[in-house]
Length: 350
Image 1 (cartoon, rainbow, N blue to C red):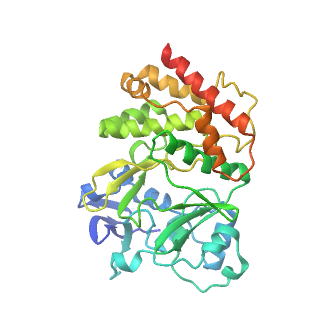
Image 2 (spheres, rainbow, N blue to C red):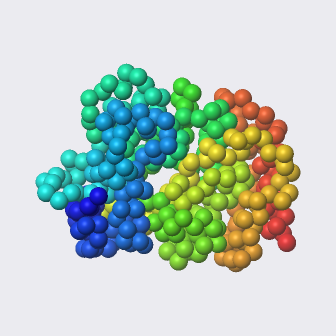
Image 3 (tube, rainbow, N blue to C red):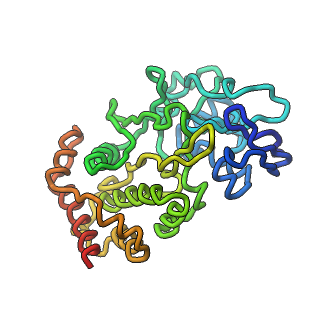
């Protein structure tokens, strides 16, 4: 389809798009992905709901958007999202940011559970069309604040809840997660796009390589690199196989575009034993340990930072488990994480 209009940051025009081609007027406020690629169509597609999710297909049907592709889906809500203040104003539209930012969501139950009563709702603007990710989830407005609600089995929910608590016990910045009626919920860490969240693919593309990422963040700011290293340290301890460039990133000042810090560590539901208890509990020949320690071997700055990271104790791990009502083999969790930590410390000592 022909893409014509303006890329907006709140009510500021940051770029003009003519037949899909971009002309930038404010580089400082331009989304990082567009700074890197200039590819407007890919940027729009990257903001679309994952249509492989069963409930997303129900949502499309309820909204009479069954035949719409990803670009058409996001443009239905001007490509607006909960966690940033970017949006797309199509040619001829006399609208402002206040007209496109979300103030309600009547399709949260449909997106989360496939609720049949929600299926019959009349059309209204919903943030679900730009709610990315592969798990069934929804945005819910409670007490004037947006919360992400996510489904998952017991082990997936335990992983998210536990890693949140362990990371905080170690002194790292973690997104908050709470249990709620067989789901987990997390408050919007941008506080209604008072800061802009942008995923790491805006900086490194699809390259998940630790060395590439650490260097890229170091070049932006050594403090960012330190915060990135905290994330992959937690991934290594807790065996998060699913870290990719769409589930970590940075927070930017919504008024100036300045990169402020890494976003808090989130999206840890496919970690620990969420996909079954590994046979390799002693963590020898552990791929994530190898990748993490490989970065430390290659980059002296990363090594120097990692030397000062706290080591989780058995008591700390047990204390975090005790805060969660989901049943789990406490001894096995302790053994698995402690052995991973020991492997890291052994590499550091060498």
